[in-house]
Length: 131
Image (cartoon, rainbow, N blue to C red; front, side, top):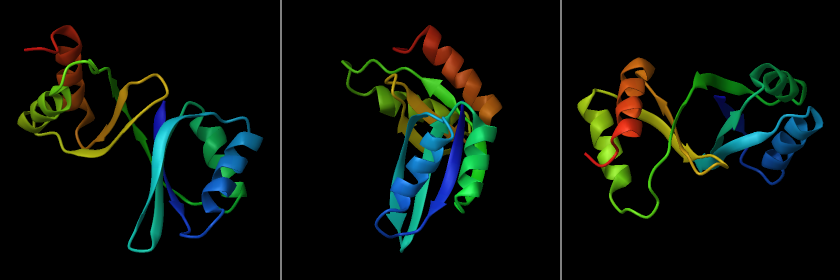
C-alpha cells in the first residue's frame, strides 16, 4: 500500500472525478481523506495498485503530487491516550508525521519523514503498546 497525495480543484465534482477515474480503472481506495486549504484541494488516499492509480488519474487530468510509503499501526480503540503515546514515541525518535489518517481496517496510517526510524517505533509498539 502507498499514499498518493493528489491535487484537486476546490470546486464541486473534483473529488467525484477522482473517485470515478480510480473506480473505472479498478483501483480501490483503502483509506484517506481530502481537505481544502487556502483555496486548494489536497487529497491523500491509500491504494494498493499505485501504477494503475497514477495512470488513471493522469488520464483524467488529475495531478499526483507525491507517492509515498506508509506505516500502518493498530491502536486499542478502547484505551484513551494511545494516539498521544504513539506520536510521542515518534517525536522522541525524531520522526515528523506528515500525514495521518485511518484505513478501512481501522488502522492508523502514517506518512512520515523518516520511515526507517518510524518502522522501529511501530515494531516496538506492536510488541508492547502499553509501555
